[in-house]
Length: 440
Ligand SMILES: Cc1cc2nc3c(=O)[nH]c(=O)nc-3n(C[C@H](O)[C@H](O)[C@H](O)COP(=O)(O)OP(=O)(O)OC[C@H]3O[C@@H](n4cnc5c(N)ncnc54)[C@H](O)[C@@H]3O)c2cc1C
Image 1 (cartoon, rainbow, N blue to C red):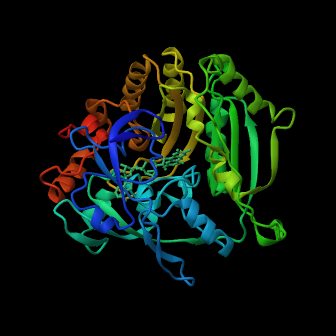
Image 2: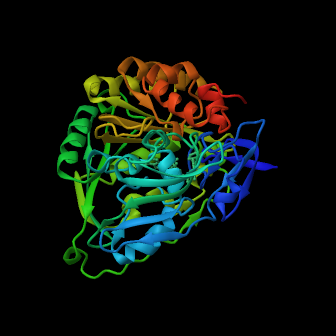
Image 3: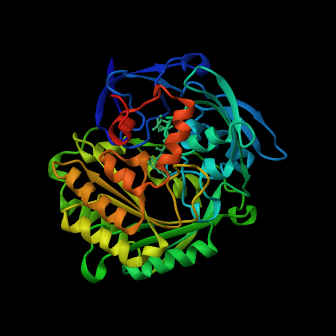
C-alpha cells in the first residue's frame, strides 16, 4: 500500500496496479486511473477496495489515418506524448484541457473542455467516436453511437464509474503551425469582463480570463482576458517547434509565503503587465498558450502540506452577470482567498450524460484547504443550486451528496444506465462513495 492522491495533494491509502496490458489488468479492478490530474478524489479508490488500475503504461497509438485525422490509441496515452508525436506533423487534439499531463482515458471520463468550449464543445461528447471498454461483468466491448450508445454517453463525464476505457477513437484536427496568434487585454470590472468574454467567443476559437480574486467593490471582476487562434504558416515564418523545459517546484511552500499579501501581489503584477497598454498581442508557442501551468512541475506544492481544492462551477447565461457577482461576493464573505481564479465562456451542453459544461459562465477558483473550506464550498454550492448551475466533478473534493443531487437533474437517468451495466455496484471511487452514496 502506498499513498495516492489527486492533483490537490489530499492523500489516501491505496495501491495502483500499473500495467501496459490494461485489458487483462482491468479484470476485477474497481476503478481506472490515468495521470491523477483530477484535483479531488475522482481517481482514488474506495477505502474497502483500495486498488486502482493505473493505465499510463498502455500508451500505444493503434491506428492513424493521415487523410482524415482519425486516430485510435490506448487509453493511457498522454496528451504530452500525443502532442510530441503529432504537432510536428501539424495535427492537434480537437479539445485540450489546461494541462498536457492527462491521459485519453481521463479526458473521456471527465469529458474535458478547454479554452475553445464555445466552439469545439467537449472532447468526448463532440469528438470521440468509439471506445473499447471492459464493463463490470468482465465483457470487453466495442462501444459507439451504434453499439451500446447508452453506455457511451454515460461514460462521457461518468468519472470512470461505468467501466474501464481501454481504447479511444477520435478525430484530430489539422493546424497550420505550432504557433498561436494571441491577444490579451486588461478588463476593469465584471460587467466588462462578461461582455468581452461573449464578444471574443464569437470572434475567436480560444479564450480564457484570469480574474483578480481579491478585487472588491467597483474593481470586482477585474482581470486579464486572453484569446487566440492558430497562426498561419506565413505568420509563424518557419519558427522551429521547441518543446518547453520544465522547472520543478522543489518543496511545499512555507506558510509565511502563503499569505493574502503574496496572492494580492500576484494579481497586481498580472494586471500591471497591461498598464499602461490595455492590449498586447503576438505569436506564442502552443504550449505557452494552452499549458502555462505545465512550465512548473509539481506546482501543486505551492499550496502547502494540507493541499488544495479547485471549486469549478458553471452558471447558466439565463442567471446573468449578477449571478457571477453574487458568487464572487459569497466567496469574499466566507473569507475565500483564491490563489487562481479563471473565468471561461461555455457553449451549449454536450451529449455526455454527466458532462460538466452548459451554456454560461464557468468560474474555477483554487483554494488552499483550511478548516473553513467545507463551509465555503457549502455556501458556494447553495448559490449554484439557486442559480441553476452545476459543479465539475473532476475538480471536486467537498460537495455533499444532497447538493450534487439538487444541482444535477440528469443524475437519475445516468444512474439508471450505470445500474444497467453494473447492477452489483462493483465500480466505485472515493468520490462516488462520498457524492453518490456508493458502498465504501
Ligand atoms: C493544471 C490543470 C489544468 C486543467 N485544466 C482543465 C481544463 O481546462 N478543462 C478540463 O475539463 N479539465 C481540466 N483539468 C482536469 C483534468 O483534465 C481532468 O481531471 C482529467 O480527467 C485528468 O486526466 P487524468 O488522466 O489525469 O485522469 P485521472 O485524474 O487519473 O482520473 C480522472 C477520472 O478519470 C477516470 N479515468 C481515468 N482513466 C480512465 C480509464 N482508462 N477508464 C475509465 N476511467 C478512467 C478516473 O477513474 C477518474 O474518475 C485540469 C487539471 C489540471 C491539473
